[in-house]
Amino acid sequence: MKKRIVIVTGCLVVIVGAIFAYIPIKRHMEKQAEDKKWEAEKKHYEELSKDQPQPEEPKIIWSREDDKEKIATLDIPEMDGEVELRFYEGAEKEFHIVKDISAVDEKKTKTVKEDFESISPEDFEEDEFVKIEPSHKENSGGLDEPVVIGIGSGEKKIFYGGGNTFQPCDEVETINEVKTCDYNLDNITDIAMFGTDDKGKKHVWFVEGVVGSANCGLKLIDDAYWFSEDELQSNLAERNMNDNASLGEVIDGDITYKSYQDGYFDLICQVEMDSELPNSFRYNLKDLDGNDIPELIVYDINFCCGTAYTFKSGKVTFARDDCEDTPLCGKFSFGEIADKLKIESCDIKKIDENNEEFSINGDKYCLKYRDLDNHKRQFSLTNKEGMDRLEVKADNHQAYLFTNKDGKAFIYIFALTDKPTSKLYIYNLSDGKIRKPILYDGEYSLYNGEIKDSRDFKLQCPENSVVDSAVQKTFFITATGIPFTKETIAQYISSDSIIFGNKIAKKGDKIILEETKELCFDDKMDGEVIFNKTKTFKKGEEFTLYKYEPHLDDEEVCNTVWVKTKKGKVIGFKVYGDDFVAGK
Image 1 (cartoon, one colour):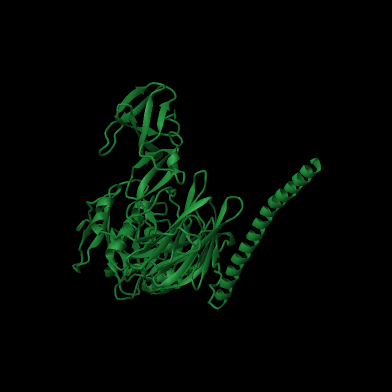
Image 2: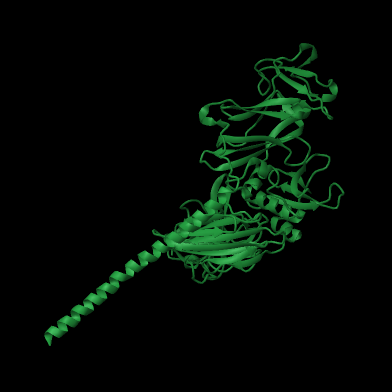
């Protein structure tokens, strides 16, 4: 009997052992089969791509490491033909547009002293050169050396400088392409530069050609041709730029709009993104040229100056700056002007299933994923012509497809980890091509919930200036697919609310003051918060976190934190570093 028991037990052990041995073998075989499928798919699209024209590897025409001065030769009609683009590694790190004036005929040159009040092209003949002599060599704020400028011979006589300068970016390390163009459609020659920064990231720099008053030795020169980097348009172009884009594609209109509403809305979003201080701009819509399409006025409150933009040929372009005769003023906040533009919501499809197929503008796409080791997840997005593979740190994800009325389409992939953290990757599929996604660089890229309206959804981010917690804001999708918020103040939520699958709390975290503090505060929630009161709060006193707003205070980063007391009173605090020390 004992032998039978031993034999049966032994058989069970062998069977169970075989089962446990079979499970990892089966998983290994399944993984191998899955790897083969993914590799076969990759090979298939690589074969397809062989028949397509491949983008050439960008040549480097200038590098800071090479210590080259001359970068390119350009044709600029306003400067009567060919000029040279040069770089001077001085304290200013400037790019210079230089025209060779060494062979200027002295007979065609008029000399003026630096003590002139102003000079104008009307005072000179076409093709005549003007030599400005400094009054004395060490004139503070004036000229140290003679300056020679010329008068253009085009339809409109203008001065051009012998050494125009601009500074597109301190971080520029290489330049791959330089082209002249008229990106803002004002009939004045501009310059576009393509290259990389000191981190290897690709950039486009638009440098606007300007005809207007300029200073030379603190004296006024009318109708001068000079250059100014257009950081706003550069940033707008980069938002839709992909790794394979050429400078010509960027110039020729990657960013076009079917309506001025979409174009203006995208521009004001970029203005707000670029602003270091919240609520710094006011806007207006006003028909300045009488063509029934209003111009957008962007008014900077801090500098009391306005800029007008117009809509032409599907593009938002510069119209004019503020001037004394016709000042440009704005009266609407960002939220108010956004409401006036009445941007429509996108159609939304949540991509729930693995290997799910969907259509965009008649083309079929498929998004699938698989889990790798070390908490990584690999995505594959394909259509009949192309594929992109995205490998990210993620334990989970959510994916959404947004399509607007113009046929522009975007896929959002929220790659979530169990920390919790997340990154948002955005595919722009508006032209039917699959390219690398944009990694959204905003702080609010955590997502927990469900997006039902592209004009109203919430994103979260961790926030620990007071305690380990989280905050959230309401966002909407811009015309270029980037999420943006018109809220300056964030709502505190429980840190548990940002864990995927948890319900988002409506109230903030409870905190208890760890030591007695005398804090500056103000209990006004409406309008500007002025911290003109002090109050002593005792150790052990309990608060509820309510709202917070990051901002600059005398050029120092500061968080304004509002809390609710047990009696329901709302109190606001300035938080610099560890000034407000509290714990849950």
